Length: 350
Image (tube, rainbow, N blue to C red):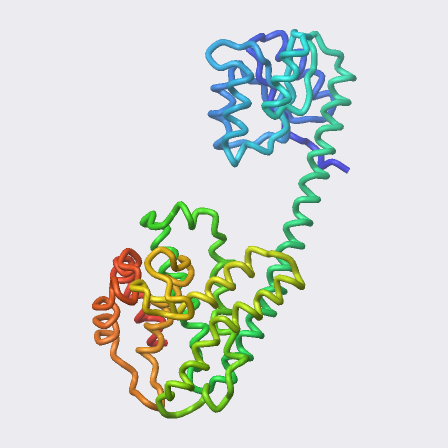
């Protein structure tokens, strides 16, 4: 059932048409606002959002076609159903209106019972669509929460095997969020990042070290520096991570989430100067996810205590990272890091 007292705007420059439509709609149980121009309608949106708009086509200043274009271009008004009131019966006008987003045409002079019936039908359809959209959004939210829960659990399993790097995944996730938010605010690499869902990308970064599942506990938890052979095996966690995530993709589909995760896993040890691993990529050959992640990864490694080294101070860490701009790190992102380094320090000190 529809809620009582739906609000309808009637927009027409003809006072007789406004009066006729208002009488019919009030009799039908609707709250009605009659407006003599599209400009007046737009001025009211600050206070009132109607459930449906009856819009005349031929009006001075702004006609109905220009008005519906403006309505559909605004996120706040795009979803309001619009029915055109028109004296025209030609197909070309109707096709143009429907392409612009109108849900129906009512020819003037109109029959009140027909008008009321059409309005009731479109309001019912609109309500069904809104409810269905809410259900889909709720289901999507549940799926995302389930996905993130599974990923977080898997990431924790990996981290719990590595007794040396406790809290690494949580901290690096916070670091990359700080960096990405600042990069977006400054417009850095915005053409690539504009389509990113920030929450999804941050969650996918939790899997950047998932390949450590394939690394021996003896290597992961060795209290001394690794030998060259051991380091070679440790380096394989990047490609092992890609393999694991590829298996996930095979089982669940080519989801954006997993594509981001694969890029984080496979490229977070590549260096700007081409001397990183596993592929020796250089500069912007390195996926943006990897160029962001390496800064977070190195910052956390430097500020964390290890059996073979003490934790570096924030000043020492910042100096090292800034010095390696253009060698280890993308110099453009390091400029952003330099602006948000205080936020990094706050995360590291918790």
